[in-house]
Amino acid sequence: MKVTALDPNPYIRPTNTPLTVIAHRGASSLAPENTMFAQETARRSGADFIENDVQLSKDGVPYLLHDSTVDRTTDGTGDITTLTAAQLDTLDAGSWFSPLYTGARIPTLATQLADLRTRGGNLLLEIKRADTKNDVAAMIDVVRAHNMTDRVIMQSFDTRHLRWVHDLAPELPLGLLRSTLDTDPVAIAEDLHLTTYNPNGNALDTTPGIVADLHAAGIAVMAWTADTPAKWNRYDNYGVDGIITNRPAELTGWNWARNGSTP
Ligand code: G3P
Ligand code: CA
Image (cartoon, helix red, strand yellow):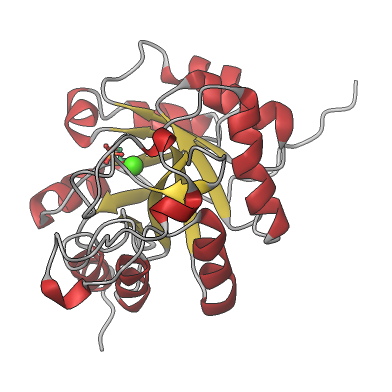
């Protein structure tokens, strides 16, 4: 029998190397979440990845939005699935955060990917809502159209989403978000063809040994959402590969110092 070695997982960090810094909703402590301002701020903060949430408009266009409605983060109202792209494009997604950002728009996934492709950066894209496989296909179409399949990880709390992505685009790496840990994280990771298992940090505190188990199976671990040096230190000691944070600039600096870098 011929045994073929598996390709190493590029998201598992070698020992004594920096954590992957993942900017939650962009640099969302400094700029309005899921906007191009938050993305640019995250890039300038040294983030390796931007994390964003994607959903479809009424007419099927993928937009970056966390909540199911536009109420909290724009000057509009309503569920995103009741608003067309033309309507979404008129909304102000910045002034709720600060007058400085008045006029910021809800970006389409296409706008975001064009910016990442030309100006640099990688994307951890959370499918926040998709009711059908066709909904997920619309998102994948945009990733492929921008030739970004090698710079995007798709993640979701919903295992249906991950199975749909794997069916439609097996070349895309997958991450499973978890608020609590599975009884057997390795088993579900293998079943779903995961590249990364992404637990809530508080859940990880209960059983940090899953990191070694997942690594032994070739699965990376990215913990969310941690904004303090105490947590960064703890998760680093657990051996996680990446940390999702609202404070990417601070984590970038901490990461450098932790690894003995000097300015
Ligand atoms: O990536 C982890 C995190 O984004 C999941 O929670 O609610 O911020 O999308 P939420
Ligand atoms: Ca998210």
